[in-house]
Image (tube, rainbow, N blue to C red):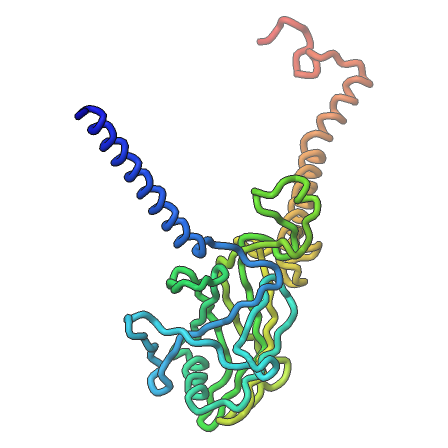
Length: 304
């Protein structure tokens, strides 16, 4: 009687242990399910957040946890929302900041005078409902240029934005789990990607940059470009290349100099060395002089 009872207790303990493991694994999977990272889809929007600074000294502001505090970019007049970027879209974005308040105006003075950088961030992947961490973002530095005057500012509002991703926004791609039949039906809506790096810089305007005082509007123009590679493509500027960005002017000049230099050396060698030898050989053949006589010996075998 004791042996069956002992076996029953052992089996009950094993079953309870397995059930607890299954339940814990299930709970863990349920908790981790919403944390599954997904890539950006083509056309998906995301907010731009910038580092919060004091308008008096330009120092950054930390939250109650001691971490840097980021706030949404100022509201754009066109959309009545903070600045948003569209993944994979290379359309120019207009963002007019209406009626510059006094704190923002003084912060612009810090940015223009390079006393403090305009540091922003972009979500590397679409944000989940869980609390995000600093490593979930990509730092987005904006080099805003202009002229600082005593009573006003001149800001260059035209910005070039460069963003590197893990996949080409203009290409077509599917995840590795898709079958061949599904991949044959892929379209632009299935393009995915992750943001790796981003930067922006302003260009000097063709005319005078707008004059700004407190209460004026700041019209920003952003030309966003996306690159799936870690390096930028070859330049197509006429100052650095001549044939589609692959053959540079320096390469063409080097080839021409090498061609003419090699031709000059070959011509000098032919006229100074090879041509006299051939003329001398031709003359000996016409006169019937033997090979031994050509070397200065009239009779073969006598070399004293």
